[in-house]
Image (cartoon, rainbow, N blue to C red; front, side, top):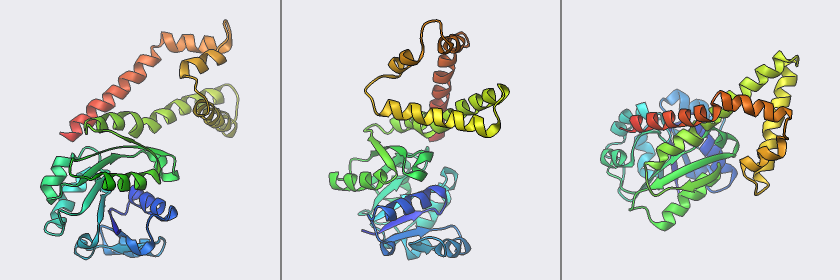
Length: 266
């Protein structure tokens, strides 16, 4: 199987390295299309795979096409791919907001999967929601899922609209976590810790809490109950969070992200 990744940016290279690391493909089977010859030449000196700047030299050769460019660049890319694709090719898009029907009409390909990865995919700890058209066979879908699994975990959704919801939760989610961490780091520094001490305390607290959650069957509420004793320090903090309606602010923020994702898709 020959794979072509269209886009030599962060996510494109992340997929390339994950595929090679898992030995799903060999360097000879992996192609990456870059925007310019200079970029292709530069990347070829630092990464494994075959690098191109001319779609005519690689698009027809691929069994699987992976669209890994920014959504705003999709129109130009579609124009460059005109007449080069084949209906038998399978296409995987990780472009946010560009719907499968739009891709099908632009390229004449009906075997399309669309995925929403998130930033931790860069270290193999991501989570990706993905969907597909009816024309994708079960074997092809398993093939795509195996590729996506090299970057972390996957969730298949039958309704493409759910990818907007995944964008709001897991796609944007790392920024929500960093936002909360940043606030805690600032609080720790105001209490007298040095920046490095504050980052260690907060970073390890998040890592440990998530590991505990993942290694148990307890819910978040049950874990909160284990930490918060009646009349204690944690209860005092949680009371303020409730008074400030932090829970509602978080859910409202996620819903705002969902609304924006839906708008971009239209």
